Length: 142
Image 1 (cartoon, helix red, strand yellow):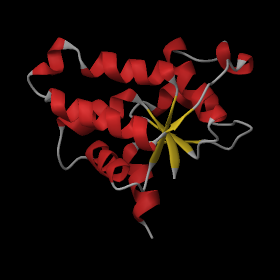
Image 2 (cartoon, helix red, strand yellow; image 1 turned 90 degrees about the vertical axis):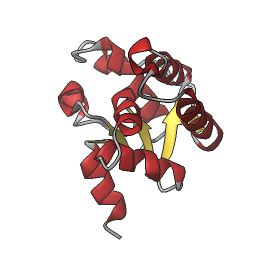
Image 3 (cartoon, helix red, strand yellow; image 1 turned 60 degrees about the vertical axis):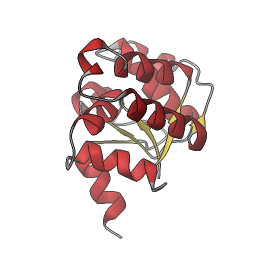
């Protein structure tokens, strides 16, 4: 499955073992989930995961390994603006995630804040907005 993974999933996945976000990180590592990203998203991952509040709870090595793995195995796209959605997004910082999902023909966006993406539920690309547990169950129901 190809997905754009919201930053909050990576943070939560690295913070807590035995959680659905941690299972999403596991699915990335075992190649059941392929991340789609652009430069803006990768920059956000790096910036958020390097914040001082995470320094004592997430090892730099874990962050580096995960981001390198995503960069190496994921799909890097050049995503342009989607004007039709720009005015309806409650948080403009979420626009790169939908733009990247559309550019990369993602199956879904995985987020812990589905309500932030409610404006994108009905989209012409049929990209699903999934919580980590919905995604995990969808992938692992086989």
